[in-house]
Image (cartoon, rainbow, N blue to C red; front, side):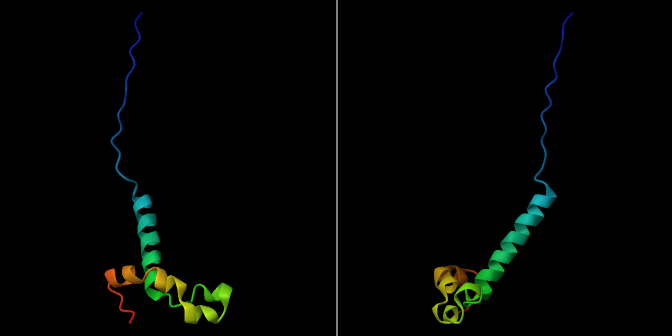
Length: 71
């Protein structure tokens, strides 16, 4: 009595759902970086967020690399 074991190697592709979710996350991130002029932090900081624009300053060079004019 001999037993044989089969080893199955699966060469699956990246799931389409994972790519869709990654695309949505990327798109939302690009929207936030391109749109924000203090709007996100204004929820917590109030009107002073429009003057300080922390997210804009943090992502300033990335905004230009993505093609968003900001000054």
